[in-house]
Amino acid sequence: FDQLACRSPDRRLSLVEIGPGEGDLTADLIQALEREPPAWIDRVEVVLVELNPGMEARQRQRLGATVSVPVRWSSLEALASQPVNGVLLAHELLDALPVERLTWREGELRQMGVMLQGSGDSAAPCLVWRDQPCPDWLGEQLAWVQQRCNLELPPQGAADGWCSEWHSELPSWFEAAAKAVDQGVLLIVDYALEAHRYYSARRSDGTLLAYQQQRASGDLLADAGRADLTAHLCLETLLAFATEQGWTPLGHCRQGEALLSLGLAERLHQLQQLPPSELSKALQRREALLRLVDPAALGEFRWIALQREQATADASSTPANASPFTSRFLQDPVSN
Image 1: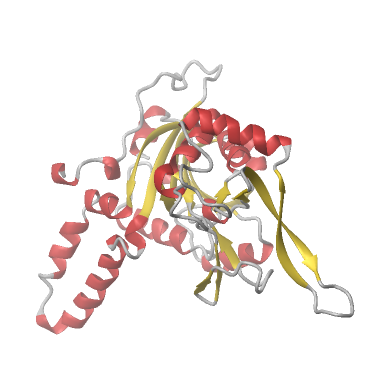
Image 2: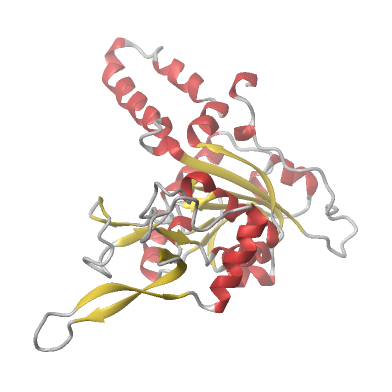
């Protein structure tokens, strides 16, 4: 925001969270701005992009007491009519977008579908997987990205029945996000793997999981409609789709590395200075902070930053070839 404020001294600064859930992250960010108000605090607005009316109602209740920073709700389509100047956040959002499931069957890469089976009198109806040839649009998308990313699907050594996911919704999502901002940064925080790990012969059943009541299951059709489905992202294909829609990658790293760059080590050291009477509180905070960087927990999250610039007719606006935004979380922790 400091960099945006300097580049566009007369424009409003927008913090846009897409898929804000309960609104907790937005509330925390507002509180952080209130603790040490920056010089540009009067120019800041918060924009929440929420498709679920029920969740929007809960967010309004959660943020209803907020008075220091104006909050409004919108859609990416509505923002496209008046693109913002700011930072877009997509925290655990893209892994919930619909995906295509692919399988390698008898020497052919095929699309997996779902059908209802046993709907007659003899058996209770149930959902089952059925594969079919890939439609033309999917085949073209697969061919484009495989060539762009030097990717091979299926990977060498894949056995018959190998499965994985294809993030076919990402191009349209990045296009909509690009139209919503004329200058700024998009920060994606999500589970993501490099292509050689994602599309590996050893990862024979992909990353798609069903979550219900905080429990994960690989039986995706067992309780259809009542469980959340989520699939990890592939870094290379995500960046290819984003670049094609006008985003410039600034860099990416694991959450553990990002938080160390942002001063996590100093926070942990400060906990050691608490008096003995607050030992229990210090231990609880330490455990919570370490969970954020634990590779077996949230430390495997990827922080991915992308930049967006649009040339405009306004001579005072930032030119399209302006220097890239810099992000502290992408810097070497040793240098901080």
